Amino acid sequence: MKDPDQAAKKHASRLDRREFLVGSALGVGAVGLVGCSGSRREGTPGAVAPAAVDAAVSGVARFELEEVSLAELQEGMTSGRWTARQLTELYLARIEAIDRQGPTLRAVIETNPDAVAIADALDEERRQGKVRGPLHGIPILLKDNIATRDRTSTTAGSLALAGSIALADSFVARRLREAGAVLLGKANLSEWANFRSFRASSGWSGRGRQCRNPYVLDRNPSGSSSGSAVAVAASMAAAAIGTETNGSIVSPSSASGVVGIKPTVGLVSRSGIIPISHSQDTAGPMGRTVRDAAVVLGALTGVDREDPATGASAGAGKAHTDYTQFLDEKGLEGARIGVARSQFGFDPNVDALMERAIAVMRSRGAVIVDPVALPTSDDFQGAVLDILLYEFKGDLNAYLAGLGPGAPVKSLAEVIAFNQAHADTSMPYFGQELFLLAEARGPLTDQAYVDARARALRVARDQGIDKALEDHELDAIVAPTGGPAWPIDLVTGDHFLGGSSTPAAVAGYPIVTVPAGDVFGLPVGISFMAGAWSEPTLIKLAHAYEHATRHRRAPRFLSTLELP
Image (cartoon, rainbow, N blue to C red; front, side, top):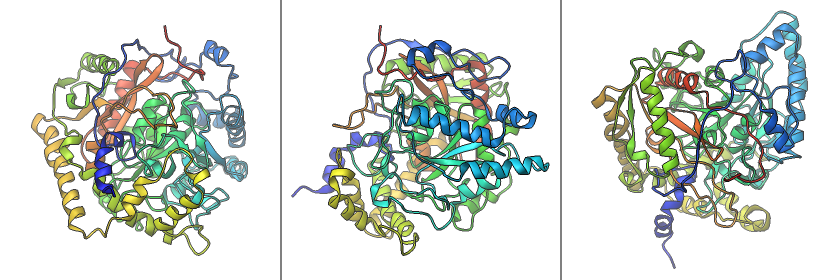
C-alpha cells in the first residue's frame, strides 16, 4: 500500500494552485503578445469605459452599471438617479442575464431572496436623512464560505452542506450590514476553498459547478474566490468579499483583472467563515479599483472576541475604518520598492509585463531595489502542506460542530463519508485526497506540526519578508501575482504556472494585487506586499501605480481565445 504522505510529495508540483500555494513554479510560457491598458472613463480616475465593440463581439447587452464605481453609485443615490432598490434589481437582472444565461459564468451560487427588502429599508433610512457611510445601499456578494444568518445557505460549494443555514452572521457579514451594504448573495468558489484534491479545477464546486473566466469563457477563473472575482469583473455586484489561505484572493483577482486585498491575518475576523487554517486564513475585499477595495476593507476591520487573532489589530496604527485616507496618486514618489526576482521566470510574457511595471514605478519616482530575496517553495521543505493538513482537520471539525443539531454533517469524517456515498455528484471529476490526508493527522500538539509551523514562520518572516524589508529599507516588495488564465480542464485539473503569494501567506502578511496588463487579452496582476499591518502603505503604492497605468478594462466574454 502506498504511503499517502509519499503520494502528497509526488504531487507537490500540483499544490501550486491549490488553496495552499507552495511557491512559484518555474515553467516556460508560449511566446505571445503583451497587452496594454483599456480606455479611461471620462471624469473617473482609474476606471475604464465599457467598450461597445466588445459588447457587440460577445453578444452581451450593454449594462447601465458596467464598471461604475462605489463613489458613482453613492453619488447616484444621493442625486436621486438610483435607489438602493434599483441598484439591487439591476444587479440581480445582470446575474440572471449573464450568469444564469448568455455566457453562463456560474459566478453566483445563490442570490439573497431578502436583498430587495433590505434595499428598501436602506432607502427609507436615506429618505429620513440617515446615511451610514460609503457602503449605504451598495450591493455586495460574499463567497459561499462566509456565514450569513438569512435565507441563503453557507456551504463552501459542497453538496455535503447543501441547505445549511448559519445560526448567526459571520463577523464580516455583520460588519457589512452595519455599514449599510445589501448582501446580494453567495459567490461560487473552488469547493472547500480548493482544499480537497490535488487534481481539482479551480472554480468548480458541487453546488455551483464550473465558474468561467469572463474574458475568455473556456479559461479558468483561478481560485478559490473564483466567483467573487468574476462577479466583480463582470459588473454583477459593486464589490465582493473573498477569502484567502494562500493566493485565493489575489490569484483570481489577477485572472479576472480586478483589485484584491488580502489583509494581515487578524485585521479581519474569521469567525463564521468555513476554515482551512487559523494561522493563514483571512477574508478580504475585491473591487474594480483600489479605491473601491479600500472602501470595503474599512468596513470589515474590528476586534472580535470570537477570533483571538483580531486582538493584535487593536494596537495604535494597525487597523483603520477608512483606508481611502491613504490613497495618493503620487504615492510612488520616494518609495523604496524591492523586486522579488525569485518569483519571476514562469512565463516570459508575464516577466515582460513586470519589467514595464517596474519602469513605470521608477518613472514615477520610486527607488527600485533589484533584486531582493524571497523564499521559494523549496525553502519551506514541505512545511506549508503539513501545517494546513493539521489545522484543517481541527479547525473544520470545530466549525462543523458549531453549526448546531440540524447540520447535515458534523465532522470532516462525515464529509468524507458523504462524498464517498455520493461520488457521482460530489466527486465526478476529482477526489478528496487532501481530506483523507488531513483526517489521518493528529492533534496540533504533534511535534511534526509544531516543527513545521516554526520552520515556516522562520523562512517566511525572519529569513524572508522581514529580512528583505530591513536589509534594503524597503516600503514594499513587488512580484507577479500569477500568470494568464489557463484552459479549464476537468480531466487533469489546473495548469497553474506560478505566483508569489506563499511568503506573505505563511507569514500572515498583507498583499494587494492590481491589474498590470494582459497576455493575449488575458489579465495579469502585480502584487505589492510588506510586513504586518502595512495595508496603508500598500494601498497608497497600489493606487499610485493604478493611476499611472490604468490597465483595468471590462471583459469581452469571448467563447475562446483569439490568437493571431
